[in-house]
Image 1: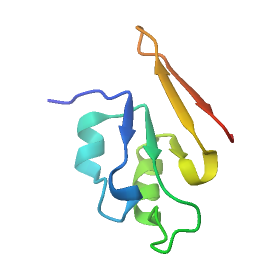
Image 2: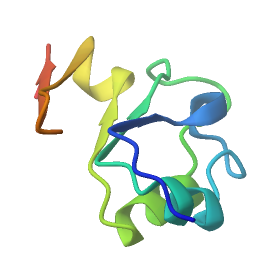
Image 3: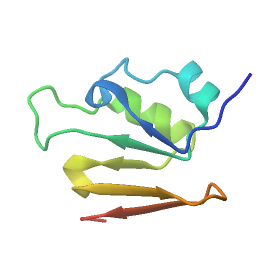
Length: 86
């Protein structure tokens, strides 16, 4: 059974194995959020994770690039995103 998620908070700052294809296929999120520090020593998020999200056609919002991110979901499941930096 598949589920539908409005927003996926990507685990462990987007590390290489944090968000797998089966997880994405199961939840089918409308968007993904990655909480990550700018120029972090671990080089998160991983290109592998970003590629998986891109291949699944999931828009990605990152705190290192977008700053504070706000997601609002209307009753019709319409997702609105506001970020400090677009």
